[in-house]
Length: 121
Image (cartoon, rainbow, N blue to C red; front, side):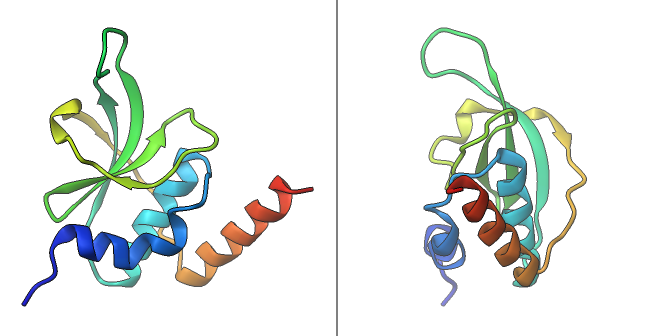
């Protein structure tokens, strides 16, 4: 029986969910973890429509298994990785495909350690 997307998301990304990195670093983590597990995905910059009145925000997101993994505001510094709960808030028709370097799990680990070190100095 195939795992549902939420269970697989939790299984793959639990080690990274407590991190607060830049949205682009989160994007590299998501793409790298999915690639390491031979799971196809595409990275995008999308507009996220506001819940209340206001301007749309540019966010980085990864399309995976017909779902969106959010990596944070494109100009965000301390963002978190999250599975989208409301894809209707994402302007997926006008997204910009991103070319993201695919990191190995070891490179991701080094990036996380390096970021933790500089955040606490």
